[in-house]
Length: 510
Image (spheres, rainbow, N blue to C red):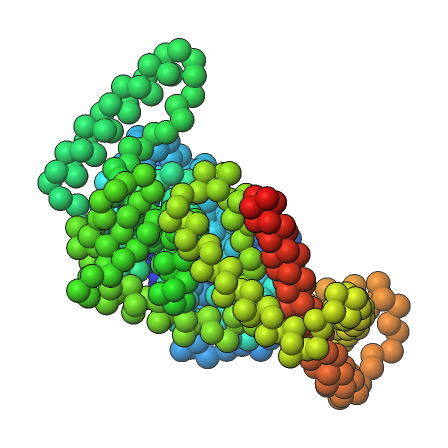
């Protein structure tokens, strides 16, 4: 059962983080343990990697970021964030979890959820309680050093813009808990519901079904291993366990009850019904519904609706305005979909075709040639606007990069001059390593770009504002063209599928 813990730190000594990860410490006092010579004792086993640090150490990369963006200058500023993913002690024996695999999972988690932040990732084989739980420390510098791609879970510009500080809000933690759960699911590891606590109800009967099923599976796997064949499945799942996992995967994403029930049917063939204020679920292949009360509180109507509402509030501003796509019912039936899916698909197609006709009437595009011409026009406008936006973004990035290098050069030039006359250059260099590195990086940038005379920062800032204004104008054109283009492409596809289904029906009647 992987858990996620967050710790923020105001300590400006970034080397203390690496010291804690690499050396042994007393569990109660936090002080390093010393050997007979009075030196800190290395941990018996650990794996350590860094990300987004370039050629520098984690500490130096964080210091450079602080200097570059003029942040984390106050004692009360949060300098770093630490996230600890602790895996179930049983995962090593039952699911083949090793330190190398845990480290790889930690690196993947960090790359996907903390892009742009200097990070140090370290895996330890055991916790302070000696329970044998492998765990991964992910420590990130609080400042993002580059602009990253926007993703739906991001809430504010601080979540993707360069030079902004990471904030561990309630919604951020909810997203990260979902990511940990999906990470464990994908790796075949034990997990619990990190969103609502342990609200999954396992009866005595189900417990013994699981125990007997796991024992049988272990014997089958032992026979396969002896025969030189790899096991196909290591963890036994009861019907209810599978149902919980499938419902949860949809519940974390859906934003309305209609979408929740539609996705369950579409993805897993699970039907949902409400009776006297209670929900029940019917998995594919069963004839009797399973009450939500028997699988866990989180699957009851009240908590399901609360989760859907929270999802909707979080994603409403990012949800694209699209019309529904028609489903090829006959093709799905040939794939093995049942009658329940067919009933859902017919209702879905009726709604989607209604949306399509309304859209085409509003746009005056009921003629196929007119629709194709409009799609071509929008496609051209979309790509032209996007090309302009990308060009402006590149020019803005170059402008900002130049301004930052100019600021570093002017700020640290006196230090570089003092180094030339310093009595102890090596000591002076070590004392001001981060600042001098930033200065030399700026000088190298000027040389690489043949800049012999530094432009005025005020002039560069005015140029940046003009580029941003122009980008906003073209971005609106790009966004409008993209929205309408996607709608009309969906409409065209729906019309084609509708007439194809109509021809099938007429052929069948003949």
